[in-house]
Image (cartoon, helix red, strand yellow):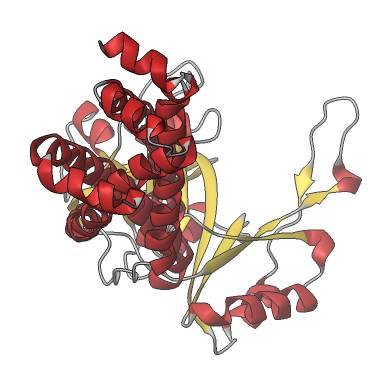
Length: 411
């Protein structure tokens, strides 16, 4: 009788023990398939997330080498030139832009005291639109009450909830802010809050609680004579697919030694970093599951083989080769494995779809990627290889014995 036929007879007659093997193979394959599918989703989503959320780049002033002091190591940076900004803004591919500058100022309020802020000063953050500031874009701070500051909000200000609480300020209250000898009165129109430990994510000595968001016109009133020195301008594209072409044109146009041009990933970078962490965890769990599945399968097959020593001894004494007996055990597991993998495919497809909805629920308009069929094929072949190795390990010891010794031990 052929070993494949014997394998089928054993599967048909020993349904209980083979059902347990079936359940184990379904569980292992489902976990591995679900993890592989979610990892594939994460990789594909990382690629397409930038296109979904929009592409942007920023220009900042580079270090002016002629101003570097060897004694104090102080230096100045080139200011962002208005003519260069206007050239970029007029490109048809540019949707909008956001100017950004920062000035240390004082006010008739108490700022949050820290080791780096001992002189009761605050940081005025000037933006074309505060909603486009990287802190808001990246989710480090969010608007609690009131409105954002844009070009229309002249002589108006947005402050932190800690600063408002410290000074008992509410929406509509007035604050005097000072820069040198200039004083302006501004009204509070917005209150924001930062995430926990947000200051650890920022540059040294930058305290979110002491930030005051104002627009360009308000800052111009505070400066008096002179122009605002912008440190950064961010440009947002209409069509992210044109990102590379637009950036290349900008690099050809501006004087490179004066500027640093870089991709501004604040809009999507935090989410992608989170996805990368998910991928590392998933791949770690997949590796652990492969090792654990292999060990458990080996133990199950060793137990299975040891309980069939008598049968193996009879087959060997009848002239069956050790290879044929090993192939019978392999066929038995594969007969159970094939339907188990089909069930695992159906389960993993449903589970991974639900997990995708949970993980990416915060991203609107993100279409679920198609499942790569190579995931199924790769794991199908990989698990067959794992089964083959487990069968060899399980049968290696007993097949070394002489058939007469096996039968004698059983007697």
